[in-house]
Image (spheres, rainbow, N blue to C red):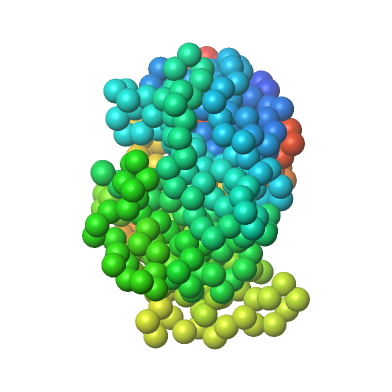
Length: 375
């Protein structure tokens, strides 16, 4: 079992200067630093790394910022759709097309207004001269709902497919209704069309974009680096946050089965997993409110390779999960003494970890080794 979890026990978050922290790991001393690269971001939600090193960052209020690798704001990107920025809604995820070098497509998700309320939207445009050209809405998760909660909204590419998570919009029974996109993981082509082999294609009582359902509010999505399978995590109520591996046509139980409880105390449902419902591979009780997730695959921290990192909003830490296959064998909490809500977690092209903190003075933070001679 790895012991690298001791590596960042003393990390300090929130200083503009480089603060090196030294911890002992099996007799070896390893120095790390945490840098605040940018601050003053308005509830940043997601980031994507451009090939030349710049970073696109969404702000929930509706702006898409272009930052340098050092965190300097270079531009606000034009051509972004109007968003319904209320409650948990606004401009949400951002992702680059796998063929971005050729087609320049940037994908966004957002909460958009419409008849009956709002809905989670997906769209894309070509990034040229700091503007999204020919931006088009590709997909809308319907029906529209009069709610400002549970938009889900993480994106993950898998070959010809694009997975998109959608929350139950704070109305739990929608997650069990196959004639409702909400509370589901959706599987689309890159242009927003529905693959012919989706599990519910051809059924009159189901939406054909649905891949799996019974999800409460999935705000983390990442492909496993070895199996290639999609992993998601989702918020539970007063406990029962889950990590799940979506399967075609599978029902992940919410609200028929959950480890969480009503906010006023009582149990919501018995554990019915195994009765046609798929249980989580890991769950958190009490709730950490997970958001953002990344598998670590780089060389900067060799002992972390294959590990999973998850941000925590409610318990304000970075969760570090060591895995054996699909089983979590060890979990550690980092950065848990600073009280900062961690919204997004990504591995950068330089092999460092990057975090976004969810606040009106939000920050972009990098975790990196302390270079020789740096102080």
